[in-house]
Image (tube, rainbow, N blue to C red; front, side, top):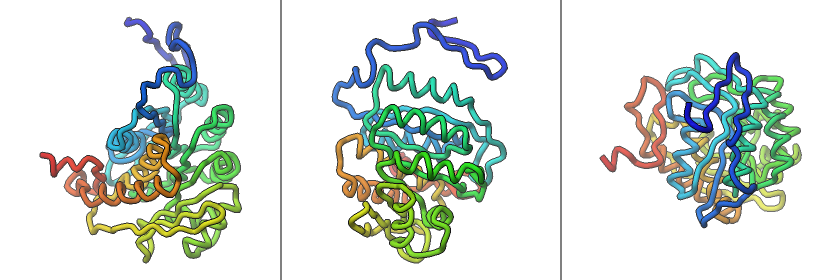
Length: 288
């Protein structure tokens, strides 16, 4: 067995000697910003951790990941979800923070109350600019956040966030009423989020609405009639986190995220899978 390798029989956690790096925190930073995604794997490669790491790379930052769950997923359905033990989630976070360091982080699909609590406990102890993407429903329609976890997400993670990035449907569900983006953003701010971006991929108006507790800013979003939006929200929130890691101000980061997510839909891979195709942040077809 190679040095640093280990086995986790029966789902248990095995801590491996020699796995911690020298130093701690942000010791090995050679100028390249570092962004972390705390989210779930999408086996189809369109959303989740996979989309986040693509967006980090496209933004020019070093991307890292802490998985909280795995999905059996493609463009048409999420057929199974496997939660990882909270202790293993914590071990991943410890490993990243202790050796590499983090300039900004984002959360995606966290699925359950116990996973949200584990992430919130860690983030409280290790504050960095944090984008909370309250992922609730997949583009295929599958529920990605258990009902009893919504209250925990709001109570524990919203106050720790720099900004939250719900789409219109998520904002309505979290706010508890069907209203305009301005009113929804204000309500989510009242619920504890320091700043809110209600993204513009749904509804009549093609606009991201940013509210930072004082100012309302509307960011125009170009929509594209392409059946390839799977991963657009992840790409948006990951790009926003990457820009914060690079030192951008919130409005500047939100404008960049809106543009990148829109371009990724325009370049989307509509011919991949039988359902809503994945977005393409690298414009792979154009480069082929």
